[in-house]
Length: 529
Ligand code: HEM
Image (cartoon, rainbow, N blue to C red; front, side):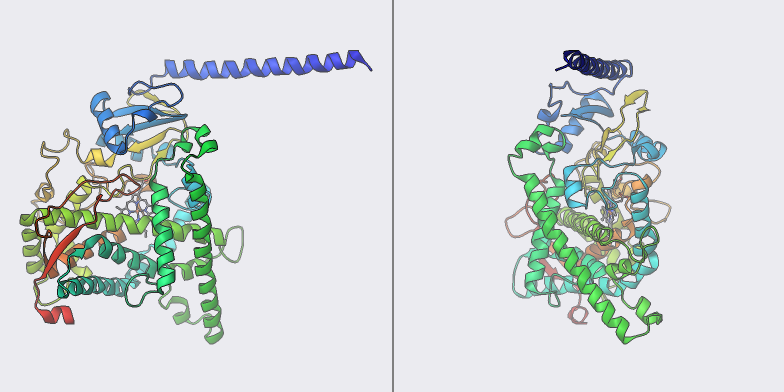
């Protein structure tokens, strides 16, 4: 044995290890001193390892709002191993979403995003980069175009009539109306008809087994996307996974994928049948009443591929279902709850509807721009009950500064829209009062339901990541509300008050489903037409 050779090998190995240790120490030291030199925004004191995680309760948007109250409009938090900032201030929001959009328009790679959005291969949860750009362009240029959305107008009108018919049958049976159930079905049917060419609720639905499976799996998907999973902040939590949430994510991922795959296969079968029957270049075959899956199946793929990858199609469909259904139905339920709680608001909405629409026909989409008071009601609903309290969290891609404070790369950004709507510096003191009149305009112009120049409300966000479905989302909201307030009078069930306690999640609904009594207010021929 050559002891000399062994010795020199161990010496080299030991030197490498020491060098590595030294380098790591220097890097860590530089990182810490850099942070000390570069002033982080103020924030609550932090615990070792957990940071501020232990200071968060079941309603984190309220905890974050309290931090802003105490430490100022821009607050730094350490959530386990993750840097985070939160704000409820219009100027700082504008800085993040517009002036520094290039830096803050990415998304954190959370475990829910990895498992439930095809490895972040969708639009909404994808990090900033060429894939997100391509998927968003497909949404804007092929799915959510004005022309395509107009082609579904008749389907939407049918769903509005279904909604009225469902309430009407509750009235005939002397039953209390479960508005959560009906508004959920209205949004879901509108979305699935447009996306998949199917309805899952009502008389012409796709069949009870498929509808039930779809309902169960989407319900679990929404819940998992909404939870704050500690494994995203404390890597050790993932080894333990004490509540089995990561296992649940993998289970839902599998079931959703099987569901989407079945839908794609069904569409392929129908398409090849149609191709056999008619000329491929026939305009009717090309345009017909194509749903989103048909459109996506006909698009070319990347790098000269004839068709889009199935995974990309599934990721897009998944995104649209998640982004379009709960957002609109939760907003509708809140608006109905607040209006039923405030009969004087209901009275003013109905006065406007009687002037614009009259009492001899149903509301149509062309009436919606003329309902300025109802538009104020929707703005006020978004102020008090934004669909998602933190929208979808953003992430910074490189270090930057806001108001002279250092913001490290990969900082998670929680824009607190719930607290923005209750920020006393921008709203009057009556922030907890539902008062649509605060949004009224005096120059006769149309009330806009967007962030506007002042960023006082932020229903659909702004900048690169702003909601691409905002015009459609607004039609879902305005159409359901205008129809229900026009056709019926509404009161709470006898002896009950409307409860407005909320539960935290990706969207934030009322704890209890909204129940109310409806009374028809139009002549019966309008209902029967
Ligand atoms: C009332 C209804 C709706 C509300 C309140 C709403 C609100 C939002 C918000 C706040 C965001 C996050 C923006 C950000 O992170 O900065 C978002 C993103 C998104 N929304 Fe909507 N939305 C609604 C309806 C819809 C509809 C109908 C669709 C499509 C059919 C849609 C598709 C999307 C998509 C794809 C994104 C992700 C955009 C991206 O990350 O690039 N939304 N929406």
